[in-house]
Length: 326
Ligand code: G3I
Image 1 (cartoon, protein in one colour):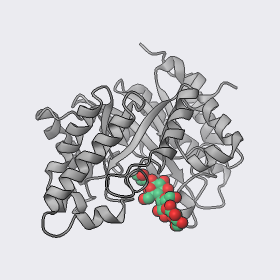
Image 2 (cartoon, rainbow, N blue to C red):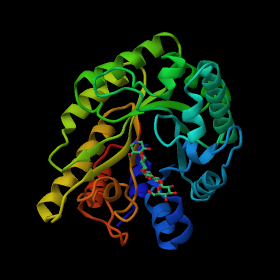
Image 3 (cartoon, rainbow, N blue to C red):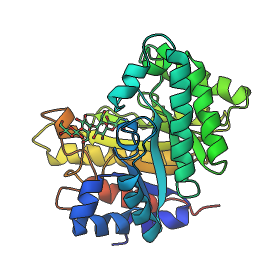
C-alpha cells in the first residue's frame, strides 16, 4: 500500500502531523514511519514560548532544531507553532504583562521573540502560526496577557514583525471552533478581513478541527467556512485534526471517525486554497487527548503500535481519488 505522502504528492497537498520530539528521539520505529507517511511536520510543544524563551532574551532552539533537521533530512516541510498564545508561556512573561509599563515591556518582548524565532528558522519553516486562538467563543478578543497589556494592536504587530523576519513564510491565524457558523467564526472572519484590508501580512487561516466524538463533525459546514475565508484571499488549512472517542472504540465508532477524517480531507482537496492537512499527533501513543480528557482516546489515524486504523485507510482512499494538482 502506498504511504499517505506518496499518495498526496501528485495532488499538490501536504499531509502533516504534530510531532512529539521525545518519541522522535527515542523510538526509531516512530521516526521512520513518520518520515514515510507524512511530508510535513509541526512541533506539538517545542516551538512554544515556554520552551524557546524560558528566560527573557535567552533562547533555546535545541529541540526545535532537531525536528527541523529531521524534516530537512526527510524532505518534509515545517509548520511553526506558535508565536503568540495565551498558554504555555513562561512565568516571567505572565508577570511582565501586569503593572506599570506593561504595554511597553510586552511590546518589546513580543517583537524580540517573534523576530528571534522567525529569523532563526528563516527559509526552513514554510508556515507559521503567528497568532493562535486569540478569539474567545463569544467572538471577542480573549482578555489574555496580550490584550490586557497591549490592546488589540498586538495581533497586527506580530504579523508585521514575522513578515519582516521572513517575507517568504506564509503567516497564519490559527484557531478552533471556526469550522462551524457562529459568533466565533464570524469574529475571526471580521478580524482577518480587517487585517487584510489594512495590508497586514496574514496569509492563511488554520482550522484546528479537534473533534469531540465521531458524530460531532459536519464536513459541509467546514466546506462553507473554508470557502468564505478563502474569499478573503487567504490560504486555508486543516492544522490540528483529531477525533476523540470514548471506549469501547467499536468498529462503528472507528468507521465514523474514518468518515470524519475523509470528509475533512475531501473538503480540503475540493478547496483550491487548501494545500495543507495536518493531524494533531501521529499515533494514539503520542496524542494529547488521554492526558487532557480522561476517558477519551483513540483520536488519531494510526494506533500506538503504528498500525493504520480505518481512519488511515480512509485518508489513503481519499487521496487516491483526488484530482492531480493543476
Ligand atoms: O513540560 C511539563 C513537564 O515538565 C511536567 O512534568 C508535566 C506534568 O504535567 O507537564 C509538562 O507540560 C505539559 C506539556 O503539554 C508538555 O508535555 C503540560 O502539562 C500540558 O498541559 C501540555 O499540553 C499541551 C497543550 O497544548 C497545552 O495547552 C499539549 O501537549 C499540546 O498538544 C497542546 O496543543 C494545543 C495547540 O498548541 C494549540 N491548539 C490546541 C492544542 C491542544 O490543546
